[in-house]
Image (cartoon, rainbow, N blue to C red; front, side, top):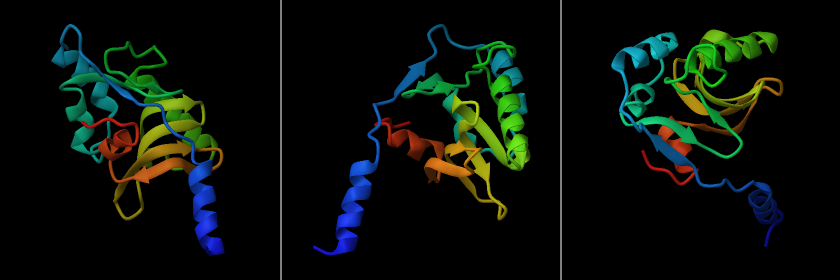
Length: 154
């Protein structure tokens, strides 16, 4: 075996395994007006898969993370609006363009699961750490592909 082969094996062994994720369906249905209000902060460039997600689900449960849900009041830290506000603060604090990011969840104050609009207009998705300015998981072409890494199909 070559040295590069061993390096690849070491990288695979160092990669943390993810606990399976879980889609959380609406229990009592949803009020379209509440969803519309909650998602008003979503930029036009965010792919339709994000809005479509809420046609069936209220959240995605993933290890050590918190999903920003549209059924939470704006003052709740787990609300979509609160997530938008906290990501904006983190992006600005660490020199990133806050208008190029949209969060769907977070791990801590500087570590978000988010859509990112690159300079060329292409969209990527993943877990990004603003302090270190790097993806910790991803980037992936879509939210759905990121969820697949948790064993979940949309």
